[in-house]
Amino acid sequence: MSDQFKFNRIFDSNTVRGRANVAKATWASVGLIYVLVKMHRRNAKRREATKYCKGCQQKLF
Image (cartoon, rainbow, N blue to C red; front, top):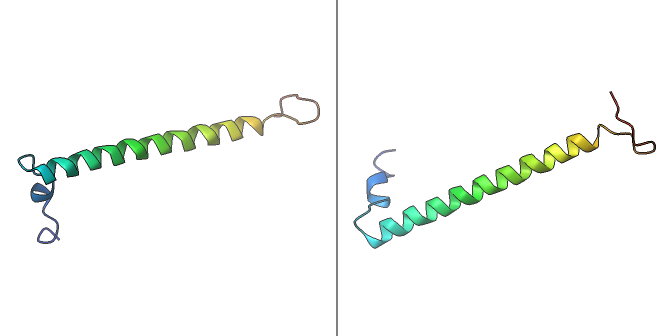
């Protein structure tokens, strides 16, 4: 596998293409973290909403 994927060559800081790849990887990781945080918050809201009775608005146990 090391013959096919050369990390140092793809993310080389001396070439413009390598710097662009670093920037793309950075943006992709920031986007992935954003999506994961949004998904986690949405699931937390759903869990909190299921703890209440819809008719009487009292907390269920």
